[in-house]
Length: 388
Figure 1: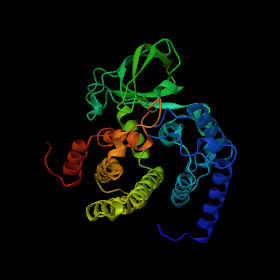
Figure 2: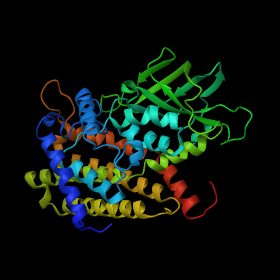
Figure 3: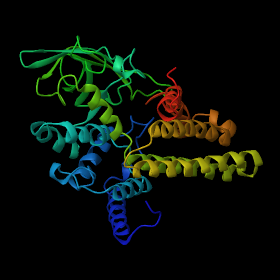
Figure 4: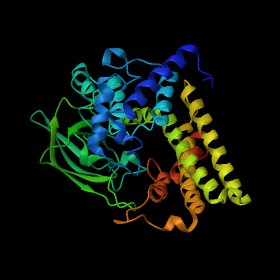
């Protein structure tokens, strides 16, 4: 992708920026810069209304095929939209898991009936989704999931537990990777089910975080039910479907995430200039290193998105880099503020946004695969080293 817009791309950028700014400086001004990782508790209902407004105006599902309600836009336009979304102060998306993960998975593997049932409501922000992958004994080793499902009288009956389930407490549906073929070998014993959250067989327990908020949850299944037709792919195809979904997770929205990082860095730099820390040679070097890291991140992300066949372990390299970078920038922000960083605001003495980012950024090197796991993936899949 060239750094300079083509005339068509520039026109699309102007169109996206005009709509976003008219909305986010008008009827939705109250949701600007709200929500996102570490702040998912903020203005949920208002951000859900924003999600529906985006869907109604055709600004969701940009890369979905037109026959499934999307706009069928190529990668450059998608990247441009995410960039302009972040520049305009767009709030954290409450529909990201639906639009960015399960939606494309249903497009790729779903039946016509599943596409007709689920895709329109995802695109319009009418149903929210969460992800049922990790378990207490199956995080980095995802294939070791122990949640089980059996088919009885036209329904899947599910028992087990999922953990670190983002936004489960506000979701309408969950996609669940679970064991359905007890006699099949590893990787062939799993299926991928779509399960309604609002039923007696599901209990959601919030996980209290360092930030004092609870966007992650434990989800317990006790004879939870879903229709037999709500399986994506065939029985035993769950591992294939689950890996495909993880591939969609590394899409164009990563560029928007990184522009969000750029906004955070700009705040840190402004604070350093205001309080004089930018004059200190060591602090100035740390700020310069953080800026360089931002540029490396963008170049690597664009290169990965452009590759028809991504290099082995490319996603692991990028995750290791940005997770480590963001954690270090959280520490940099605290050091720039100095003693001020340890003081809460006025009553009720909630954490400041900088303090919350610092604490939440500690999780960046854990969720989505720890740094240690990413290094193993790079060693084994990228460098061809023997398994540890």
